[in-house]
Image (cartoon, rainbow, N blue to C red; front, side, top):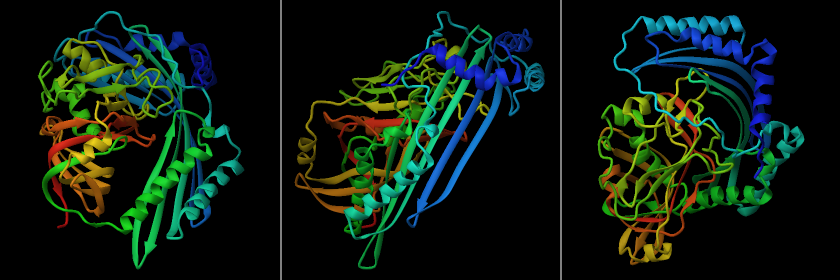
Length: 486
């Protein structure tokens, strides 16, 4: 693991965010203090320097390359349940002061609905989960182009049925400083890289798509030939399998979910319902159920922002709180929610390191990091062999969930029929329809093969997108509605 000290991170952050504009820590503290009035319980500033680069290959040619840099600061004041927020894409001290005045005036125009609770013992130390590297500088331009061309060569060598390959390579580096009215002044340097692959296979007039990819909080050298071949094989296999797929059956049946990326169902159908804001407002199906049985025995769900180099991990969250390994459900019993500063304070608990924002132009919200289910004792083959007739869903292409009711719909991009304990025909058009709370109580077997996804997750909430990780073992769901085509 490539790690570096908090001092290195702070020096880099100051050189990018403060020194070019002659801004000092004292000036920031004074600006925050100017926001604090009798109506303001807490105020903070989030400085961000972001550099991003992307390359795309299509029809055997690298057709596009983009590079961008942005700077800005978001300024927030909390008063009970009320948030006053302003941001500036200029880091001049004059613009920062003007934004701070705007926040103060917005806040003073309202009334305080409830006094915020500031718990003691906040943790200001930082994890050390990834290095301070600049991913886009870890390869020459020619090497990046060759990497994409290599992906195409790998895909076409695997099958003559591959008619088209599209691949993209992206890298970014976010440098942030978080300063708060409680004295925090914390920095973080966050690398992130990703490869995305789409292939089209054709046979007998039929065309099918396969997708794959992955990434990490690392530099571009993370993408070894072995890792790239793993992505390519997955995309090609998915496309070729779907060329042979028959129409999916419909009705209520036993469903087996594969390990890894199918954890996206857990993320959407359960994870969002365990975020603090929904539960404080009583709008989640899990609201007020701490200590109650909400899943089958043996089901343990974790949100862990501390896994080294993982896509969803952070040294500190976007409010400056150290990320943690939070047990959400333990052996079927609900243990807690994911919290940011505002919602945790209003609920009288400590933050869990889950305050996240897309950028300086957005307010923090309680969000997931890497959310997964722990493995059990069953061999995956044993789980398959236990099913007389059902569906085996290996991969998903998308879905949606209603937080209040817990109802979800997910589309399987790779799935198979199970007959008499054996995997038989691949199927197309399978959708899983259910309720997150109900499904968690229908889990009867848990595999010993829990893994995280390859590093492609993006989570959307209130118009904000953030990188996340998901994962799970192979599981058996005794009863679930499958929407098919026959």
